[in-house]
Length: 376
Figure 1 (cartoon, rainbow, N blue to C red):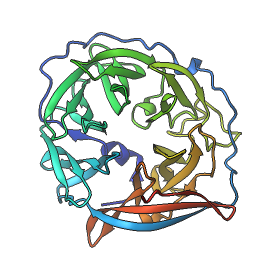
Figure 2: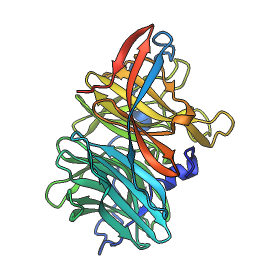
Figure 3: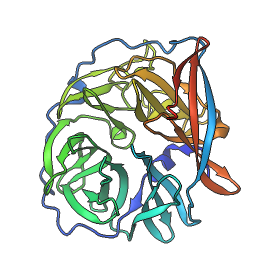
Figure 4: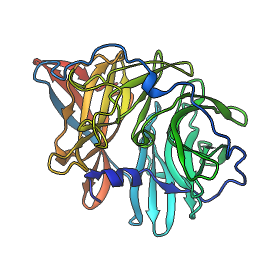
């Protein structure tokens, strides 16, 4: 398996197929208008310089290598989710036979397959897991309709929310059991893209759309953006714009700059026709004690369509940068996640098998330690 990630395979890596199609699309044709357009959101605060800290360096110590037991026919690895109890959830996709699988790994145990989906009736796009072990998935179907499916901790079906002509992509469930998704809204025929929106659904009961708090986003935002939950509420981090949108409860209350951008980079608007403005593509944020660990992929200097390395960056929970983005050596593999203790997880190949390498991290700046993985 190739560890370098191209833009095309970045999309494919998050796709899987579901075995059961929805029986009806009750919301199809019902166009939902977003409450706020992204271009009208005022960005407050100034962009910080990347030159923060002093000669930052990174120490990585291998804790252990976790076998994923990937089958030969499993072509793509999808989303990884790391929960407070130490469990690791991830999805895979096979092309022959055509199916997707959601799996779980817990400490000291081998891979457990929770749900297997097959057929050609829908694509599994993303997953999230709440504190009770409930799995939230986004699905897209060939007729440009979508749904959100909730699975119990054992993989059995709990409920589904039909999203009609809205195709959900990235998903996050907050502590109040509200489901946050970003996706594309099409017309009733599925022929024309109307909007790219953030939506919030209620997980409890039969589930329903609560609000679409933000629209007017770029097409890229539906597949290459990240949700994060902090003390003050939900954040939506775009890679096509240099802005982090802030939400109070379920309403957009403003935006602020990405913590690691330089002061001469434009904020909250596309600067050119490139897919992303920056060479660092954010894939996730992990809250560790009083800090945020940002991580993602780094664009190859020779091939702008390939992300060949990974990076991490350290900020306060208020998104004040404590270090610049620190690129990791390419031989360490592809960084797929950071857990709540600050361990980082890299995909690597050992003896022809794909493993998840778990590393302890220490970040030094100016000769002193500014961050360490919590080992207790």
